[in-house]
Length: 326
Image (cartoon, rainbow, N blue to C red; front, side, top):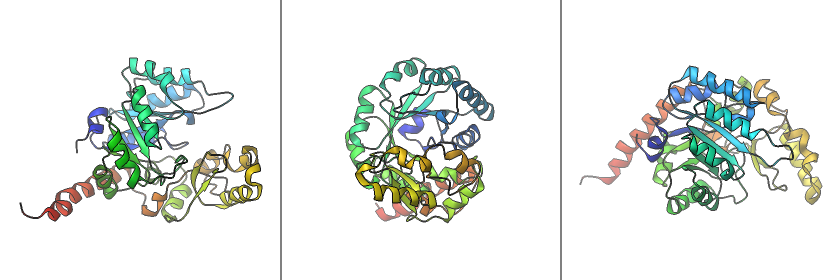
């Protein structure tokens, strides 16, 4: 399948693995790229730029296909060593960077000079237009269904994607609620040039997370996510668990007096305990409503091959048959 996204990134299938904290390691990124998609290493999961450089080399040893790095720009009193991370990306020969969080404009010149394509994650059309205006090559449009941070507008993809298609001239992918061939065909029909999957890729054999995490996703329905940190205007969609219920109770009881420090035990530094140790009640962790569409843990190649076969079948058979004889 050829779209503007496959042409831009030099990939076989219009499927991108989103950056995910303590999930986006070399082994998953390489598996996605080897299966024809675009795998993504999560930079800030690596504690230092040197560690990221090692992870990039490790990925390059496992695939000769394009892969990218996610770099999230966070507001912080003591920000990460962003110049160091960017140097590791450039020196590592990475050709695609997925940016997220704050406006990446400050960092675009050095990335562009290195010939790196930039795709920026956006939760609103106005943000996507800004990304286009500052020179991003593509955007990922994240609907309200997505795991992680869906923004504060609460617009689902059935509205957000056509709005983006009508406003943007650069390619974009759909993110949030993407799991199978139906998702891909729907995203293409709504104007996107491909799709970005996060939660679906966690439930694969190669995902370097504890089996408890994968089975929690398989067991969950579309009703099992919760929105936390809404009072702080830092909304995150997470899978329901005991820690999340404690967090929500604090939000209800403290109301307008809520501060981040009140919920830090449930959200700060919990990912290693969850993703690596399988302690499913250790804290809040990002998960999309798409969990309701996930019922197995295939290999990455099995998943991508299945998605593409289903998508092509839908386009060539079901949808074509509806047009009737011409």
